[in-house]
Length: 284
Image (tube, rainbow, N blue to C red; front, side, top):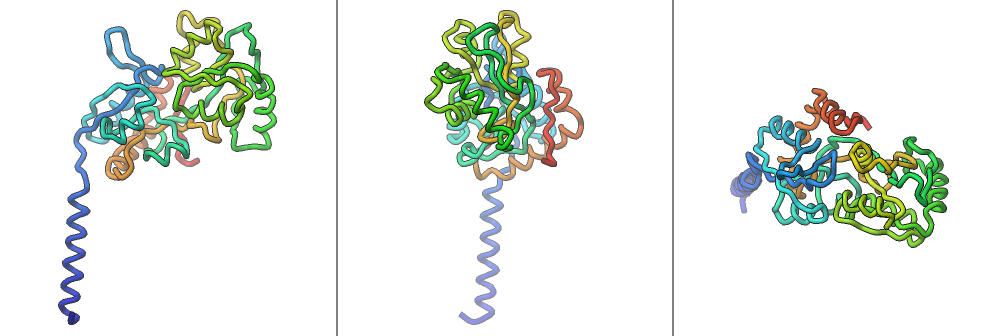
């Protein structure tokens, strides 16, 4: 092929390539948002079937900022990632970021920064744990490992309740292995019923969830104990999950989250629902 023809062919190929990319780009106007509806204060369902909580209030604000219509769809927590992969949802709220999940889905920037901790019954078989109420980064192994070793000894032979398919379940199995009995539940409320009934010795969950739980009637005998943990496999940085290969959607909601944080909306809503300021630090 002579030079002019080769150049023309290259220009045509480039044009076709650009046209293909443009055709594949999506002009998002409406999305389906998966929310569990059973994880207060992040989200819960009222007696008349209305979904409420931090996630619900925040996604409303974020969708306005992103200029996208959002339809909320409820579902069991364990079905969320398969659901977004299959196209049942486009976005998932309350999706903690960890490396295992990164292999399956993409994430926006975090919209909340939380912790995880233990729940016990006052006066039960599991007493106060080391570093009670203090923050502990599990990635600081020199500080964290001795504390976790003490907790390991304290929990040996105990039954620990966690919500299935969560990073909390991953942590209990990774740190305490076969020395504890791990019992999994569909949601935190089901686990708490067994905790109060004495069928398990402790629970391990989001510290934000725990803070909200203790203020409810019927939970007066529950208490938090041990360090307020982040790091390792814990998914305490909470973001919106989405299918891999949706960069336009990710960019729209990344910008919306940063805008909501800068405007103080995340602080206002997290204090309203959890009594904690969960505004993420994007500089970390």
